[in-house]
Image (cartoon, rainbow, N blue to C red; front, top):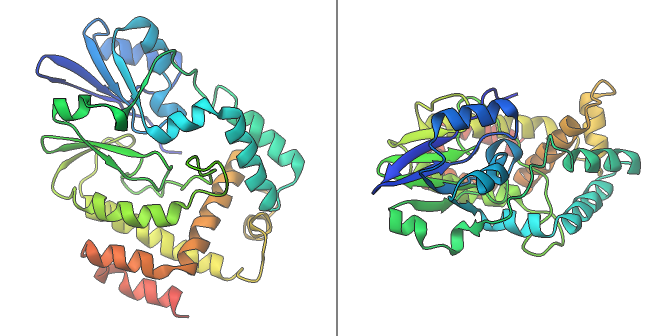
Length: 304
């Protein structure tokens, strides 16, 4: 859906650094080995632990001496994986999805398509002094996932999936791994992240998909317009309580892929959270000086 996935490397004071690893496929491994000197690799920083971003981490742990750094929230999830799966299962059942569907999605989440091997050794990025020593700023920008990190270095920023050109990256319906109780609030997190991301305007953005990003503000406005427009569609179903039923009514019986259904449910929660507290997005956009271009669309949906 988003095409190729990218990793990036640079050398800082003689230390070879890798940002993300690519997917856990033979092709991904071949590209990685051809592009990066594993014997010299010293640090691996992961933006978030979706399979296409950390897929080669376990392999690199065995075939290099590099330290591997994962986001804190991903470590919490991976170290309590069974509890996390059970929690997501509860969220889906509460959304009205049948047991059969939840079991199918569980198997998918635990498959090699969604879950890469966990490396035998890794560190928590936020607890390490290494990024600061190297001059790398670590910026938490949750929203797409609850663990999203941006790595900023000398006018460039590796942004993972939080800034993509003309892609509405789905906010993942997820268990709050800080409490392991209740849903992670992607929308509220995204509103806070938007202000941080807008501050990257003018820097060179290194995204994980689609090669380049000409403008941070353009990417943010594309995302926000999609959010507001889709929220307008979801608003028509305000009287429908269960998210699963909203998915069924909008997309009909032709939507059968369990992961796509999950993504659509994730988006509907996101849109409903926006409709319940639109002022949060407005405040974030005003702080970033971006509300003007979407004001008419915003009020057309919120005030109708």
